[in-house]
Image 1 (cartoon, rainbow, N blue to C red):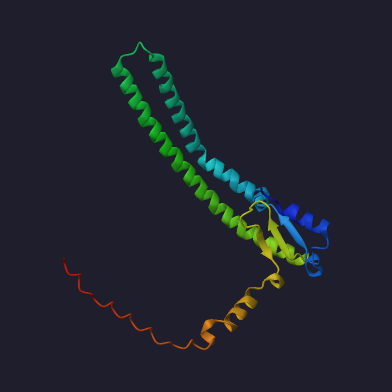
Image 2: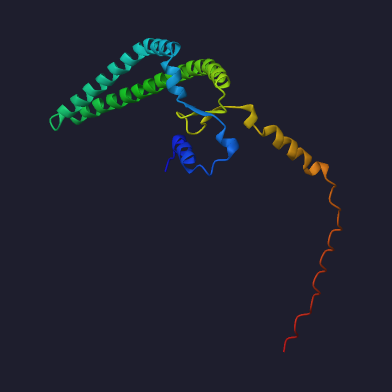
Length: 202
């Protein structure tokens, strides 16, 4: 069952006793980063440009889809009246055009996704600068991205980061700073069991 960040924060506030005084002082905000990017003027402009750029490809794929559908309708009309040879030729043509259409559609989608990702990365870098300034100016300790449950934390105050402290503690207790263990002699090899003569035959 998926539990949203909003529910977690609401539950912590309601419980009250489970929230430490230090944590209660932290100011946490949420943002739908995907919606923010596409809702900016630059985001809307970039989306419109992408649509215009790929519109010819989309129409071409639509025409190919209509052509394949027309062939499939023609094949159905043959029914039991058409010759087997005519059916085989038509079926082969349908398969060839369908595979070609699928490749063209997949290529167009992959290219569109790649270009869209470039735009999102560029705009994402710009909007992160705005988020950083806004969060700092308004004394936020953490900003959670509610559009991406996999990586919700997109900004956090340096005062919450314990990375350096963990590194120092690890280095202070690393095995390399400790005395090496004493070597012990290898245990002697077990002596082979003595061979016994086979019992004499009666």
